[in-house]
Length: 94
Image (spheres, rainbow, N blue to C red):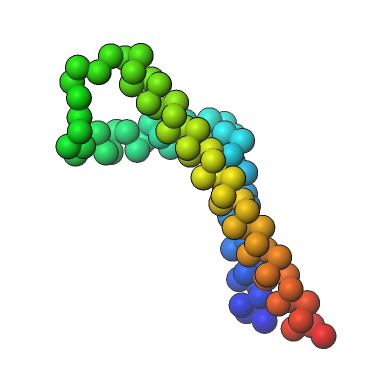
């Protein structure tokens, strides 16, 4: 019974996070990439000082798209967990 409840709650959490990333709700994907740039950039071995602001903006936009696509995958995995938890919950009630 507990596994079913955890599956449903975990699935719902993954769906909410995935939809927020995929839809860029309140620019969460953009802020996530900005935070990642601030953390990773000082340690990056491939850091280029000659990159223009336009090239950096294009790179940032590509990562935002990748983050939004990962949001779609997270939503699909959350849906799978939600369905599986619901199935376990219904099997436990019968």
